[in-house]
Length: 313
Length: 297
Image (cartoon, rainbow over all chains, first blue to last red; front, side):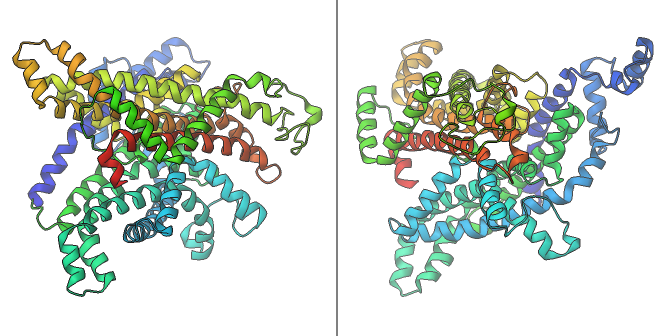
């Protein structure tokens, strides 16, 4: 198991290498000249050239890539052009809201989607099945921010049950925190839920037609036991896989959701960075999110062992 | 979004196009939702083409006197904070959304097909290209598009290019897996044995069998691209603000949510409806062209 984990971790190196090269090229190609920005707009050309030399910006592509990679390996994501602060500091400041939002969404979506998918499969063709399938088609079609504004208009502006926007840290009380999390989580989670429910249903349908499920029923096990212990456990691998792949949806959605609800997270940081053309931030966040995605999917791979004892590493 | 669509393991059933079309027709009859999707999409295309004749005025016409009027007989969807007619803006927005959706689907499918065909057949290229594609796929497509857009100045072409680049890896994967399956088919082996050159094999024996799955994939890319365009415009990194696109309209009226929420609602409904129609059409086509998957999903 440990050996396999290490091998799989090593196997992600080419992927991360490609991402690093891509992200570096982005900065390399960016029209903004950090030296000119640092020097200020009235600085003479020779001063800018001096700063450029000090930052190593006059070096050829691959030497700059090497230096950049070296500092990256030491956990340095560069310095924001606009604020002059290290990108890691900026990300650190914004980490909590984003983490809270994605974790809330993840938990709620999985907790709702898997049972819904199981019920839909168990009662295939019934009304629950049709509702789940219809909602999942709609879930793929309504963009995060459209759903978000729909929810805000209904629950915050019309009914005034929940706040329109904003974020309250968890340490200021659980209820205020939760009140601010409900609408963003629902908006962000719908597409993800639709995806998980669909795959759960399909995977369960496959398993439910197996002989051992019929045997379990025949020997008189409670239907619930058959469904969860016998069917769901064997249907789990595709479900866990899609939960991992779907993380990309959550990450992409975070950028938009945080904008709609004015949540001061990493997504908001990127949007502000685009408007200011602050490339090191865009670069740092892209690297971070892609690393999270790769890591989550590695964990998913490793989790297969728990669901399917036939899989041995 | 494309990543939202269940990763479809392609099933290769070599069929001649005649039966494929007949199956498509039969499946559409079986799936009234797919027909509803097709009709809605057709209406949207008509709306886009006929925008100037649908009771619209100049969507960029600013008039401070009639700012923020609620929906009425004169201004069907009301007016925005600059006094522009929201109905006209939403109708013209259809053009942007459909242009981006169709253009991205076309470009991404074509480039992805070319790369996929070659990598599926040329072994030494395969490893390199697939690592690059894996890398690109590990960046969420919205973020990838954002990163690319940030490099260039905002224009419709750049938006299309950025979204297409983010979608290409998925097409490459699909085509490559199809090619890997097809090249094991007896008729391909026969072609190789009889000395047919690789380009000819690709063109005559492989390409025709990728059309059906690619068509399905292209509809999903189209839907995904329309959403991504709206997201990019919404966060200020997409279609230039002077062009009325649904994402732009929503971005501009963001701060008005408490006083004039309807301005946000109309483009949102149009966008969702258009994406839904494309998705329904795609589901119907998948059912028709890919019977094994149809049973499962």
